[in-house]
Length: 366
Image 1: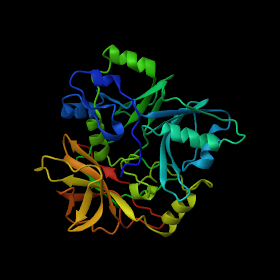
Image 2: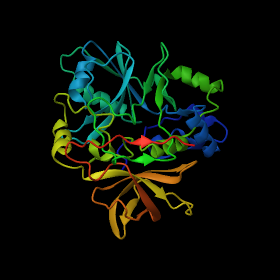
Image 3: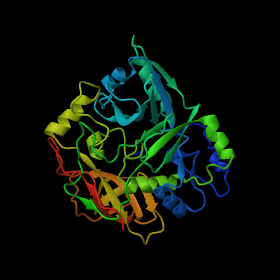
Image 4: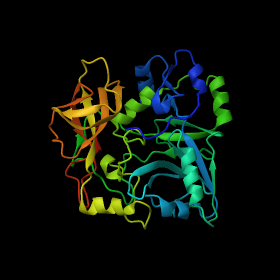
């Protein structure tokens, strides 16, 4: 389902570390792992390892009108965003399909946005077309800034640029599409933030050995899948609407004014149901291979969806996120790329008009 182009020639300096195995696809140019992905996952979850996200795009916006301008175009309420407050916003097509997922932080003078690899140029080009006579200046700062991820919800220190992921908390003006009163035992909590670091400093720190504890994309994907956290270009395609991925939880404010794609958001939320739904699959652990991203999900002989992100988790074993037809029975025994799979419901098939399902509770691990 990937709709994000791979970055053209980027290569992280961490790929020069002994044992580094290159990632493929959208994250080509980063390390998939450094020789021991299980240990990397554990360190990442414990907060003692950092993840190389230096292929992410970085866009900056300055000018007095920047927040009201972004407020008018995106799904999130931004006009009154307080300095150093993190939020998530989506830029939709006119038909309400997800085009960009914006990890957004404003420091009082500049709005910092990180986006998927290879997409900053497209975002900047679109924003400049919408600039008109407003007091804003948009810059692709990817060449000057690197992104590093860590499992933490610590508030940014003075002078630190850190986007804190709001997932899975319900944001103001948001809505939940998760199954009612679900308790998920054994799932690690998702606490995540992205640090923005001058690229020259990042490269110098790598050379000095400061990132010898880094975790690869294997570990990040495993943690994200276990937390049901959607990612643009993985869980999305050209038809994705936010309701299908429970993205109204953190990235959509249902009470704000007009923006591109709002009609679809309001119509589906108030009058209809999303045609597809996100699930997490528990895969048959006796198989040596994971299904590939994009592999068909079958209910018997009938194709009902696609695998979006497969992963091997150090505790949950082989798992995957998938997007399937809403009508697929919750107890259906599925196969994903030829591997037997059972569903863990993420988006409730019954969630529909003015969805108001109780917030999911994740039980702490023993």
